[in-house]
Length: 119
Image (cartoon, rainbow, N blue to C red; front, side, top):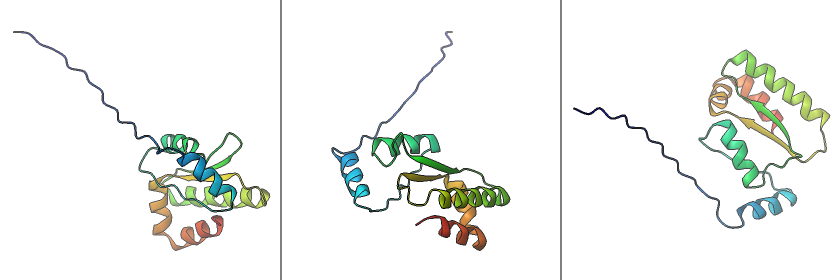
């Protein structure tokens, strides 16, 4: 009798349509605000942001990744203060995990704070 180990890996790469990055960059430069929603991990979402030119090497990124209400409150307060200091800077991004967004939406206080941060 022969025992065999099976090892496998699978990956699917979704490529952006032609000129998506350039189109988004052009619209962003025209002052249009963008939200990018993805079910991917935060690192993957950031990579997608770079691929479609929503993020650049010069982008200032704020992140919210906690799932604990008090920690999210502290993160949002720090982001609010940071955004105030960066008034007038256009290349700023907020990267937030889906789990953190769910917690924010469960608490009115966090939802209102979040709404004050986003333009």
